[in-house]
Structure formats: structure tokens, C-alpha cells
Image 1 (spheres, rainbow, N blue to C red):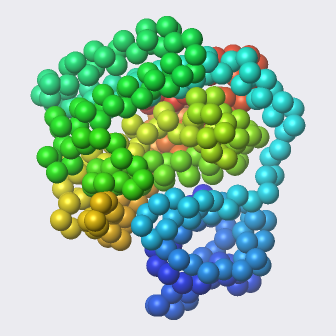
Image 2 (cartoon, helix red, strand yellow):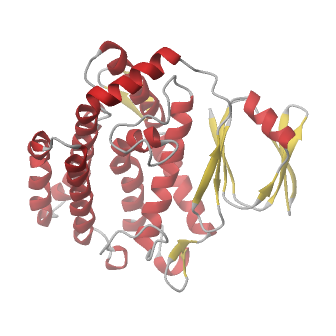
Length: 330
């Protein structure tokens, strides 16, 4: 199943059994078979006939504005609905929220540890205090008996991680403070754009399960309509979003002077920068690896969906839910 990205302005509509997109270069035809989702990164006009066509094919549309901010998703009518699972998911929120939230945060710490350890092995010994902090996270989480305390530990993990960038990224990509809306420098712009892409990938993955997108465990269900996607994307941020950023920046494939627009108080990826980032992001999320417990090759994209199935199993069978750990990759 494929992901399509539309970068230019234009018009999109149904043409027989294909998707037809027109921009300044003319018409382009996209066969609907095997399309899983479409990203719009510029202004595109369409009609309800197109939406009906897309909905019947089960394709999710994600919209970003010109500046690269995520605007929202067109989420077709759910075809996998289970009232029984929704009831059990809600009961799990009541009875097991702390347990699930702790495990999500535990996995964030573990996967960040693995990312940082790579640089530690390559002579970045300054990272030792950060690695030792991450090792202690399970202890801090066991002491956290309220969701606010667990969220505090999560926030501390990310702050430590951001602070460590100064030891392995070029000086113009050091993160002094995480600023989201709008991102005030190139590294904040990359993190916001990458996290939004991963969040939308997770929305699409959950759409193809029986899970209810609105019942989440680490994030508050009131936080966003698709708050479960926020939960399930957390384990993959260090592996997919940050590894993509570190690779592009350290290999100088993304440069401040060439790939960013600096406005008055914020920074944005320009079109060339977005294309470079998306290409690398797609390569990483579609990278296949041998899954230890499944004993077969899977992609990270599939691993996100598998986490959805793991959550369903934990809810129905009252078993432990442990999100994807990078050590599951053989």
C-alpha cells in the first residue's frame, strides 16, 4: 500500500476509477489501487464526488498548510467498528490507564537510550550522564502513582534528550528550547514537521484496526480527537523522526542556509527541504527488518499497526501492553 504526496497547488477529482490531479504542468492520473493515504502539502480544490470516491476506497487524506503545519485529516466512515472492543477500551482507560501510560513512557526512554547509545559508542562520551538518567526512568515511573506524575517523567525524558543534541549535532541545529507553534528555529521546525508526519501515519494505521481513536491512555482523551494516535506514535518518534533528522543534518543533506525560510519569529522548511525530509522519512518508515518475536520481515509502518493489535490483545485478554521496543528488531 502506497502513500502519495501532493506538493503543488491544483485541483483533484475522480476520473473514472482513477484519481486525477491537475497542476500547472497538466493532468496526472493516480490509480486508486494500493493507495493507503494521500498528503496535501499545498492548496488543492476538490468536490464531494471525489471525497465519496476516496471514502469508499478507505483512503485517509491528511492536510498540511503551505507553512507545513498539520491542518487535519479526512477520515472515511469507519469500516472496522466493534462496540464490544470500544466498551472494553473505555473500561481499560478506567482501570489500567496508569499501567499502559507507564509502559508507553518506559518505551520512549528505552528507544531514546538506544538512539543515544549509538553516538556514545562513536566517542560521544559526554552522553554518559544522559544514558544513566534514562536507565533510572523505570524506577521513577514505579513511584509515579498519578497520570500527572507520569507525564512529568515523560516531559523530563524529552528535555534531557533535547539537551543532549549539543554533543552530536552541528551548532546551528542545537535545541535550546522546544518551541512548537510556530517553531522558532530549524531544529524545532524539523521536529514539528516529523512528529506531524508520524502522527498522521499512526492515524492511518489505527483506521485499519477496530480501535477507537478517541480513547487514549498517556494523553488525555480530551487532548485531541485522535488522541490514541498520539499515544501509539510515541514509541516510534526516537526511531523514525529523530533518526531521520540526525541522519539528514549530520550528513549535511539539510542545511540551514539552503532548506529553511526564516521569517520574523519563526523558521520553516522550504519546499526543497520538505521533499528531502519526506523522502528520507518514507525510506525509514518503510525500512524492513527481522522482527524477533514474529520471526519475519516487517516494516516500521507495519510495526505501528502491530502495536494497535497488541493493544487490542492486552485490552481483551487482560495482558500486558508493551509498545514497540527497538530491541525487537533483530
